[in-house]
Length: 113
Length: 115
Image 1 (cartoon, rainbow over the protein chains, first blue to last red):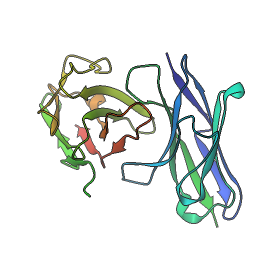
Image 2 (cartoon, rainbow over the protein chains, first blue to last red):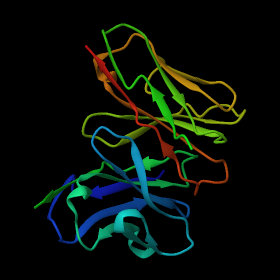
Image 3 (cartoon, chains in turn purple, brown):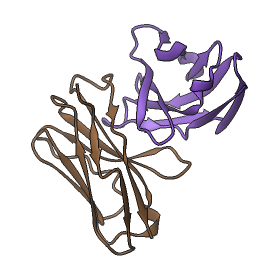
Image 4 (cartoon, rainbow over the protein chains, first blue to last red):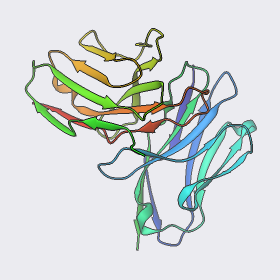
């Protein structure tokens, strides 16, 4: 079975500060990993994904994530937070449980001015 | 092009009533998924359709839940005899069938409230 753990259900950062959202996964096969963002009352939007082409993945809105197999991690970062980054972020994995995505519990980001 | 659309956007119903939720996937996407998102929680997989193959129903929480898909287009999720614990946002997603690395594109969801 595969699973995803996101450390911290809520993260508060100051505008301009580093954003770091943690994601650890378990999978019995090489995984595909995704980060999605959900703005209030909207559906999920893909930020970036890891598909084994490169371990450092760059996404939209200045976000990036690094796949570390030895740590089974896929943490999401952004060097400088913007007010518009306030949203909920979900890490997900696919690969060993059929075709579905398995999601983490989500991390809600609050950006303080 | 058009994204995944879902209707209705909001649905309020009384306990015990049946509800039907609709999903229109992106044209050309042969894979279609339904997920449920309860308040303050992550997404739970419900069901997956792929072309003419038998759907993967492993995530359906009870026999009150069912879903159908017409060919490679519209899908409907039906909840019979709704219960208050069915209150959630129901999200539909679709993707190309070129492998698990393909992105699932999500619709805006249907927010269901069972009174």
